[in-house]
Image 1 (cartoon, rainbow, N blue to C red):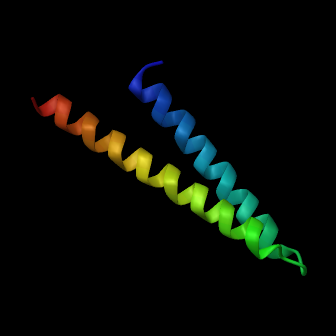
Image 2: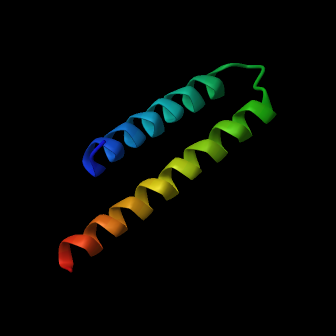
Length: 62
């Protein structure tokens, strides 16, 4: 899988988690543990995307 394809897949997963978080917040009985887990996974994906983008930028410079 190319770096661009991998980044696209990660971004799609990040967006899906964002939608799931928004959906969870709309329900009156929010499962706080589930919500915290979703947010943690979303942050992990964001960090991985940023890391890969940084590596990609570095490799195009050198």
